[in-house]
Length: 88
Image (cartoon, rainbow, N blue to C red; front, side, top):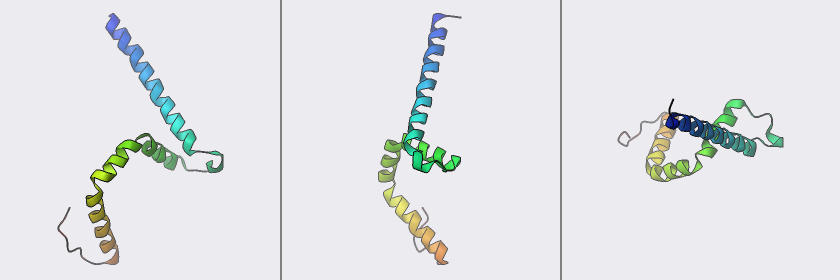
C-alpha cells in the first residue's frame, strides 16, 4: 500500500466527516424545539433543500418560464380543461 493510497483514505474520511457535520447542522437549524414532531421524511427533504439552497435558487431563476408553463398546465388539467399551449 503506497503513501498516496493512505493519503486518499485519510482525505476521504475527512470529507465524509465534514459532510455528516453539514447534514447535522442543517437538521439542527430546521428541527428546533418547537418542531420536534416533524416526520423524518420531511426533515430529510428540507435538509437536502437547505444544503443545496444556492443551486435551487439558481435553478428557480433558470427555469422560471418553464415552471410557470408547467403549473398553468397542471391547473388546467385539474379543472378538466385541455391546455392550448404546445407541450413542454
